[in-house]
Image (tube, rainbow, N blue to C red):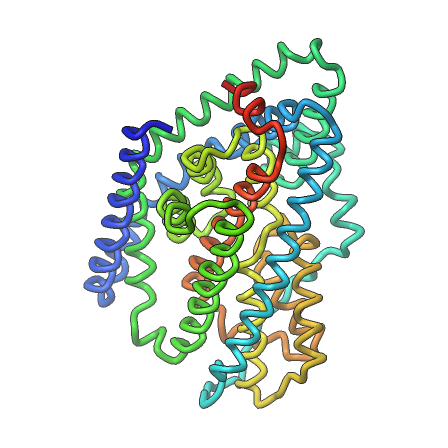
Length: 413
C-alpha cells in the first residue's frame, strides 16, 4: 500500500466524517419539517445505496470464487473456514455477555413508566435451523443470483471455486476471468466511494429529522447502553484481537477501518458496505484470497452488534414489563442468540426475528418489541457498523495466522 494511496484513503474518511456531521446538523434543524429531508435530501442517499447494491452480487460471487480458487489446496480452505466460524461464534457469545452485563449494571429499563397497553408486534416465525441448512443449497443458482439470496450465492460460489481448485490448471482460464471481474468491481467501487460523503449526508439527514430528541428521550438510556456496550466490545475484544492475535496497532486498525465503519453506520447494511470493507482490507494488507473468503461470509453470518442488541433489549423489555430475568434465563439468551445468528442469516429483518426468538425463549412478551421498534433504525446503525469491524478483525486475524501469506499476495497480483 503506497503512502499516497493511504493518504487518499484517510482523506476520504475525513470527508465521510464531515458529510455525517453536516447531515446531523441539517437533520436537527429540519426536525419541524422532516418532509423536506425525506423529499429532497433522502434521494441522494438512495442513489448512493443503489450504486452500492448494484455491484454487491457480482462482487460477492467473483471475489469468493477467486478467494477459494486462490487458496491453492482444499486443506487450507477447510482450515481457514474453521477458524472463521470459531472466531465469529466466540465473539458473538462475548458480545451478548457484554450487553447483558452492562444492561444489568446500568439497570437499562429501570425507572421507565412507558405505556405498554395496546402494544402489538406480529413476530415472523424464524425458519427451523435444519430448514435453513436445506435452503442454503440453491436448486437454481441463477435464480439465487437474480433474487440476491446471499446465502445461496455464497454457497454456490464456494462450491464453484472448489471445483476450479480441484481441476487445477484447466480452471485457470475461468479463474482469470473471475479475477478480472472482481478487479473491475473494485475499480467501480473506488469511483462510487468518491460520492460517499454526499450519499452519507443524504442518509443521515432524514434519520435525524425524523427521530428528534423529543422522540428519542424516553428510550435514550436503551440507546446509550447499546452504544456503550458496542464501544466496549470494539475497544476490548476487537482491540485485544488486533493487538495480541494479529500483532497490529489498534489505532492503525481503527484509522484504516474507519471508512468501512462510517459507511456501515449510515447505511445499516453489512452487505451494502461490503465493497468498502474490501477496500479497507486492502489498506490493512489482508491478502485478497482471505479477504474475498472471510468478508462476504462475515457480512452474512457475523452478528456481534445484533447480539448486543438482543441482550440489552431483552433486559429492557423485561424491566419495562416489571419482570425479572434470573441467571438461567440470561444464559438462555446467550445460547439462543449465538445459535440463531446462523439460523436466521439472510432472513429479512433478522434482528427483529432473532429478538422475537430470544423473548420467546425466556418467556417474555413478544409484543414488547414494539417498544424498541421506533428507534430500531438508530440501533441498527451501531450494530451493523460493529458487525463490519468484526468482519475486518477476523480477516486480519486469519491473514496473520496463515502460512504462505506472501505467496497468496503474489498469486493475486
